[in-house]
Length: 160
Image (tube, rainbow, N blue to C red; front, side, top):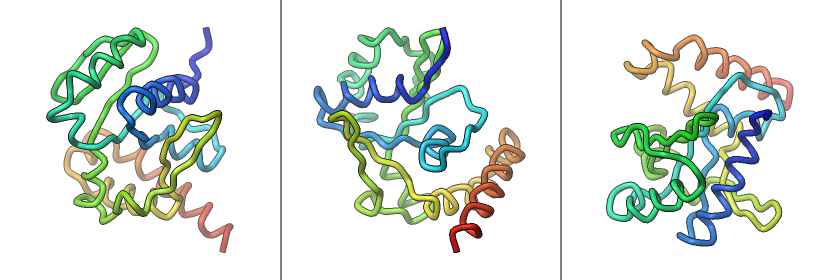
């Protein structure tokens, strides 16, 4: 069975919309691929949600994710897997601390009655510029992050 990460995200987003009133942010490579329509190499889904669901309401979130066939793999990283797909959650409030992106400045979309958020190309540029300077990411992902930043810069130059 072919892995379709956008479909997996949509299923989860629908459940989060209905059961927890969360409008998740499709983040990372999947989100960048979504807004650019350029295929990127990635094998996971990164989702940003309100911090309250990672802290005080973790069990509510965990129950929904597990009901979709995922199991908790790493509590520290808030990471789940179903042997096909890895999903990791972080809090959306960190974006403001990390690069100055306020939640109210993030674009909201709706497809087939499923609400979700995505960053703009300019917001992704801010994220990847900061990411390539981050200690952990330099060690683990610097080349991939730089490639994404280069892609973003090319796309931004084309649109100007």
